[in-house]
Image (tube, rainbow, N blue to C red; front, side):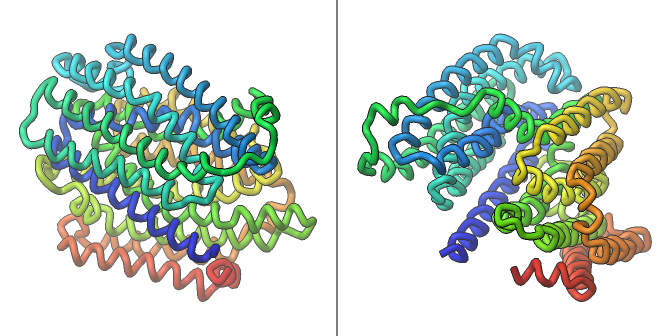
Length: 489
């Protein structure tokens, strides 16, 4: 059963991410590296980003353990209480965003010309209207996660991205000015509405469950303490704030820079989600069981570190060589020009180095979450965000330098997260696997220096990057028993 669920989850997650990349590709083709592209990126990503920042991670951290100890009727009562709070808070937040749309647009996209500032504000009104639906969807997805309805969870993103791709292809045919914001805004609201319809349909069986306790007992169910919600929201939301803030800082260099930074980060985000964070998620029950039974968790933690680090090195090696080809494949269509593609590739190559510290962070957070020790990590992310805000404006919107700054602050977070593991971190880290795979990055780095990868045939470059990735994984497999054991596990 678990194997089937895992395969379905991975397939749907992969399909969701691929369709998400198609959405970014359609966006790049429609608007290129332009001010309209900046506006489109901002308005289409803001609702789910806000939901992720304030609710999505907190709902999972707080409600999933809380629901384990409740019967079905109590779970439903808790869900209704949280839904009312989210809708009320979402409505208030939407009104605040709409009221401050003009100055907020100037803050988030400072590189826009005055003529597009009003258009950006118009787009933010549509984004604000979608926020309550995004928050409610986050709650319903969390409930489906508790019920292990992986089809319902991941297919919801397919619905959103499918509608937005269709909207981008339609609006990008020649819409200008307010017509662009209105067309994309209608597509956004339709996508959010259809996602709720899908999630509501998947939850219909829950309403037919027989009551296991008196209604009064269910109604009296208390929500977890506010402090728990606060720390959960900070732990889950602050990591999302880093690339969001960095892309706004990139906008200082002029129109189109925000969109280009967003596309460059997508080159990093895909392997981060599909490989590194997936490894941490799969390792969570194994590590939790080791701590719960009093067994030595060293083996489980070391294997998780080994696999996450190896996959991070493989993805980094592939992007060192293949970033220009991947950028052309995903974004080299329609109105995207060669200069914009070069920026996406170069910034993506720099940002790819953050995969290494993020591999360490993902596994360390899994261990710390098992022990209920998330506050210090949230503080580390807050310091990282403060450092980004303090140093970033001085970089003048230089995308490559901002990516480098993200690398640096994430190294700091990784150092804190690993250090919080205590004295055992020295034997929990798979030094052999990490050393071998890190040393193997010399090969793609030398190839990038020796070969004209920027002008190389796209198919040849993609194949070469895949060979380097496979080679790095093979080195980790052959040289480390921890990697072999992790893959078999």
